[in-house]
Length: 162
Image (cartoon, rainbow, N blue to C red; front, side):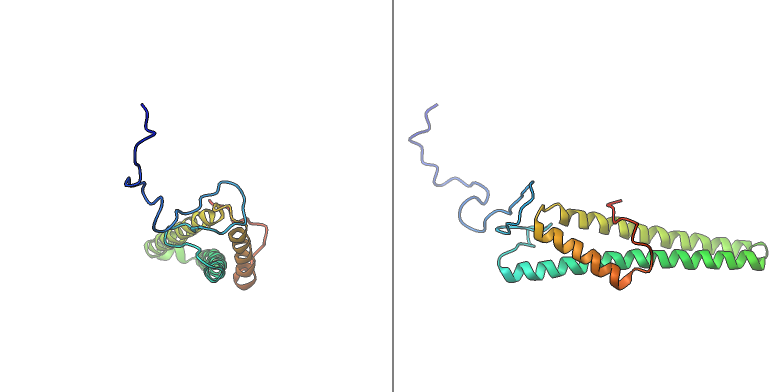
């Protein structure tokens, strides 16, 4: 078929032309921030100011992940210390049902903290998968800041997605 003489000027191409440009979706490393959307369509980089605020937000988000990790470690340590204390004092035999309920509750809290960490880590992974160098640097800076501010444990544990 010959479409040479057809007028395509009135066709709707789903946001192509007029309106706001589509989000940039690079699958290769880049420093370009033109039409960069970060995780959501609404989180779009429109200016140098929005880039700077976004990078600061990413640093804060990633630092927050380190806070959640440290809170989880501290909670587990308190649970371990309580359990050790009960064993040393022979309390577990005396009030077995109550300690079992406390242990079940602490397991639920640990599971909730773990779920928050998994969700958080996958969100950070999505940030990193913009393949944008500025965003990647902000994630690394956030891990650095978060570790300095919140972590009291070894730095050998990685911030893996899961």
